[in-house]
Amino acid sequence: MFPLILVLLLALLLFGAGFAIKILWWVAIVVLVLWLLGFVARSTGSGGSRGHWYRW
Image 1 (cartoon, rainbow, N blue to C red):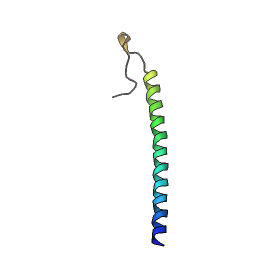
Image 2: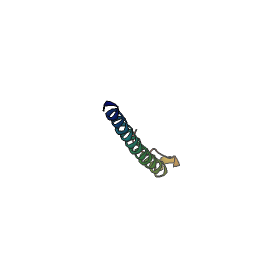
Image 3: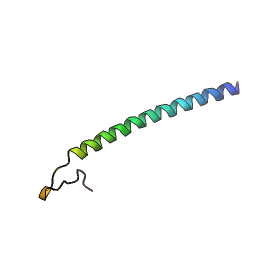
Image 4: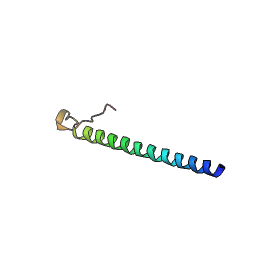
């Protein structure tokens, strides 16, 4: 009985880790897209130099 519970807990743990990793991939893709949009949409400053799209 104990080995069966151990195997089920291991399967549940691996399923949870796989789900969390998939969510992290989607978060990374969204951040990359936002970064690329900010890189493309940054405004030009005085003297024709390109400014930063972020404040810091």
